[in-house]
Length: 140
Image (cartoon, rainbow, N blue to C red; front, top):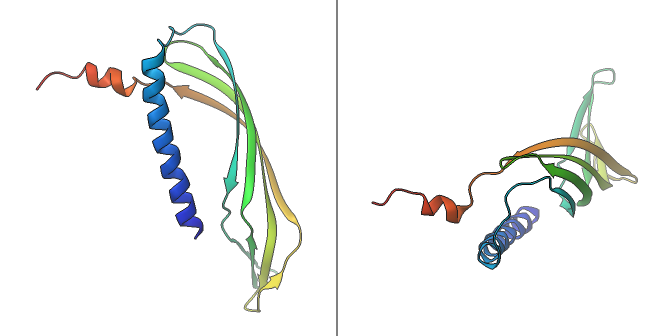
């Protein structure tokens, strides 16, 4: 079920992104790269995998399942030339514990949260727009 939901949301996001990119290209001219700063905020659902580990001291396995969580974050970036952008990103993810298993015993209800904070530096290279790339292709 999670995979179908993820696939559906991803397909919809790709279709909306393609249409809005084409519409924006026709609506206005993109200015040449300047000293442009930007801010981006994002959020969404996150689908954690089952956590599995092994304790050598007790010679037993431990597994834990989590409910679907969320991720939120923000970015501050700057275009440095026509091709490259640099940015700093701060994001936070949290998942609620659902159940756990020790060894081969039955699954038990779990209580608590797993959270993570990410601090990232990104470098992006902007490539030609699809419309520009098609226009510059040699005729057949």
